[in-house]
Length: 150
Image (cartoon, rainbow, N blue to C red; front, side, top):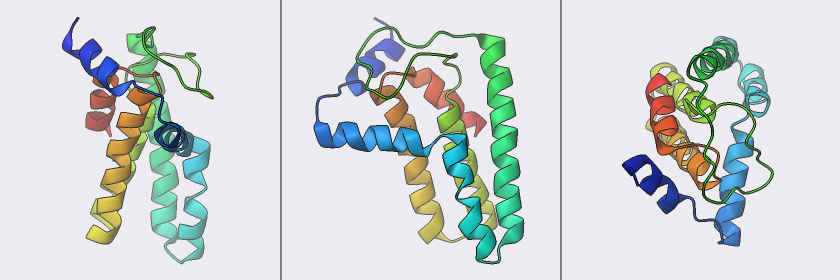
């Protein structure tokens, strides 16, 4: 067993109803169309440039992740436990959820420069990566690559 598989099996341990629900919720919150909704309150609050940059970042991330996924065509894990509502469609490398989460955290760190915003953003990004392995749809290496790309 290699390190990637060992870490995957360690983190992919559904069975705690509360933790299962949290990890599924983090995964759902990381979809592009869900994240795009966050631009609305930012726009309404008067930070229109940040809202526009946020949406542009989401589009760029979606395009870049899609290109890299297609280039590597790495299959998703076929071991471990898969929690609903996720499926195993699409390619695994890199984790687009993790890429988005880290890109957003970095955008906020550069633009907002307030630890009360950036600390929760980076915490969310780390939890997003862990959640992708926990629910069984990504290898740890997919998550690490997503974090670095983000």
